[in-house]
Length: 248
Image: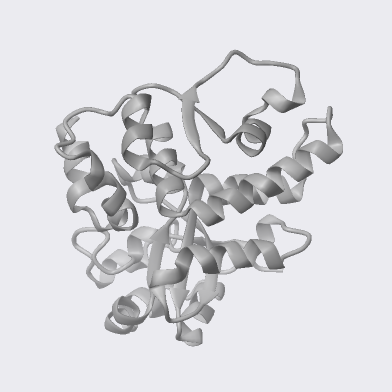
């Protein structure tokens, strides 16, 4: 368990939520729900124990957040702890994702089958990364899956001008034990100001219609400079991890 807490304190993958994590220091065990509420204090959001399943629409996970501000949370659970930290770090984006989920589910209730928009929202919520850069060339390299050029040939430029900000709480959980193959689904945002990432991501969701997984770009995030040990030139020749664009 201690190695996981060290990851939270030291690994660059956890940098976006580190200010929120530090509220729980000294962190020696996962906090209880009452402690999460007391320390995070997110406006109009309260973390509550997971309830038995209900057939009522208003008791569903997303409707309950939208209608009552209650986020069902499992005690002593890494996945749900990271969800709480992301709520604290990116409240605007989390709220708009929840609102969109609520509207989509309400319009088709009682049908629970997910459509393209719900799939996209869920994938980003669980495994999303926000890739931010004022350099459109670097963002184009992501779109084109030109990983070797992005991560190796333009290594210093990528480090200086492109930021990967992990959003997905499921991705944070996986990052406790990173492995080659760990990938994210990214929003690409052309902007220079990292201090307003939450606003920028929120605006993306507000401005988009007909959301689908095509709005997200898969990224082998451990290629980012410094996110994996021993990133020599040979590291970027693994074609199973650094996959190129799909052929038509």
